Image 1 (cartoon, rainbow, N blue to C red):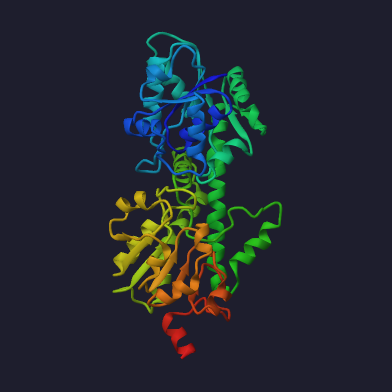
Image 2 (cartoon, helix red, strand yellow):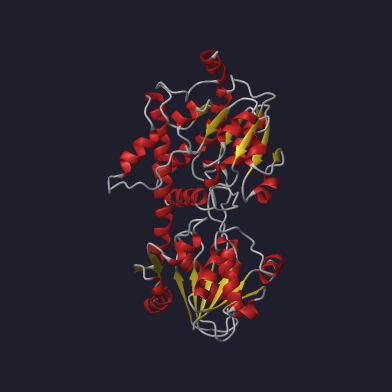
Amino acid sequence: MKQITVVGVGYVGLVTAAAFSDLGNRVVALDISEEKIEGLRRGEMPIYEPGLEELVRRNVEAGRLTFTTTYEEALDEDSEFAFICVGTPSGVDGEADLKYVEASAKSIAEHMQAPLIVINKSTVPVGTGDWVAGIIKASQPKPIDFSVVSCPEFLREGSAIPDFMRPHRTVLGSMDREAADKVAQLHLPLRAPIVITNLRTAEMIKYASNAFLATKISFINEIANICEALGADVKEVAAGMGFDDRIGPHFLNAGLGYGGSCFPKDVKALAFMAEEMGIEPTILNSVMSTNETRRPLVVERVKEMLGGDLSGKTIGLLGLAFKPNTDDMRDAPSVDIAEGLIAGGATVRGYDPVSMEVASPMMPGVEMVDNPYDLAKGSDALVVATEWNEFKNLDLESIKASMKQPVIFDGRNIYDPDKMQMDGFVYRGLGRGYNGNGSNGMTIQEQDVETA
């Protein structure tokens, strides 16, 4: 049984701690927030992640997982590994803010009692591993051997536990091959490919991977705009593209653009690093520019569907979190969309299966309701902002009957345009061929004329 310390109990840290303890290790999870730690000791999760509560409970009861707010307790003489899993938010210019990483490295140095392998799991700029090593060396009260290993995380919110337990690969970087091999041994039960390289290459792999996925998202959203103009259906275009093994089907869903805690800050940070080295990040800048257009586009589309004026209209947001199966509201499209609709004179209401408690203080002008059917009552339009599965199986007849006007803008393309037209909705998705014969591009007035 290995003894592991995990610093930070956010999305990455808590999943890492729970998963490693489930693999039979003794894990101490540390966070400076007494509120979070006390909640975890009571079995209360600080985040929503499917399966996490049960995983934590099982390993706490087995005695393999404990929580603390002190480095003294987390780093005793038996500690072998210390994972740094703290936040690295974007700075003013897009650079990663490393103040939490720095504080963690200093505290680890001050309290380590035996040789230790320090593992950067937070997403950090290229060169951070060397910087962390320097901080630890300078902050030690007395010299104790240590090594720094980069082990970037590739966890998707909403499926973080299966992503940890069944990874596509584990990436490790270090200047100390023996230390990297020891960290590789920790991951062997996962039975996935392990890539061992140097520190900077491992750090770059994480940024390059996220930037590439963000590029696919922005690419298909630009294709969606072209599909609208030419009368093509982007969902069928993406399906046809995805059969090509060189392209693949993943991340080709046209929608509201990327959000959350990773893609926005990682693309910005990589662009910042490039510019710092005198390299113009042309593609990355285009990716960010395309993504920024998606949210105001929704506001304009809804305005068009309601006859060109949002004043006095009531609009419901179906979904608030940036993606399904999470309560994460960081850079969620719904926030910007709500602000744009309110600025246009609309009253905005919102519903989300899990994120309303988190969303409410971020969206003070939005009235939160208890379910999709209450959301629809008296609404002039609904906007699908998050593709929760429960929205795909709503009683649309009841939804239509309770709305003031049967208008739906589908920002996630979860409904079939032809069926929505047959069901009597004024419907529009993104990139669904609005120059065709369907109702996708109609405004409420146009449909009234046609059905009168």
